[in-house]
Length: 84
Image 1 (cartoon, rainbow, N blue to C red):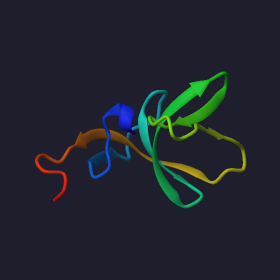
Image 2 (image 1 turned 90 degrees about the horizontal axis):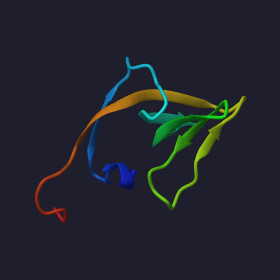
Image 3 (image 1 turned 90 degrees about the vertical axis):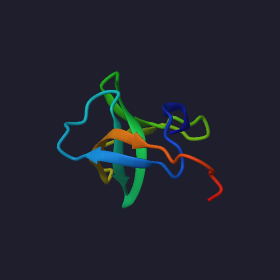
Image 4 (image 1 turned 30 degrees about the vertical axis):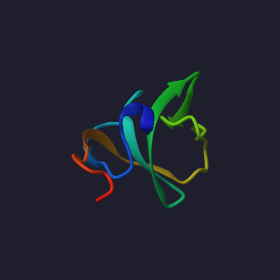
């Protein structure tokens, strides 16, 4: 999620009571694996979009095991030397 200013080691505050909407950043569980992606609704499809050009969007299709676990509401960045 580099292009949304979320980096490795950041702390995410996630609200599980927020209804997922287009453009929200979500913590999702896909086949038992957690991921952080932006929700997009395009042409009747729901996509989970990475904010990193090295990854591809995931189209949510019938039969997939996907849960939107919660919506990211805040990001906490570490201050100081990142080598600690």
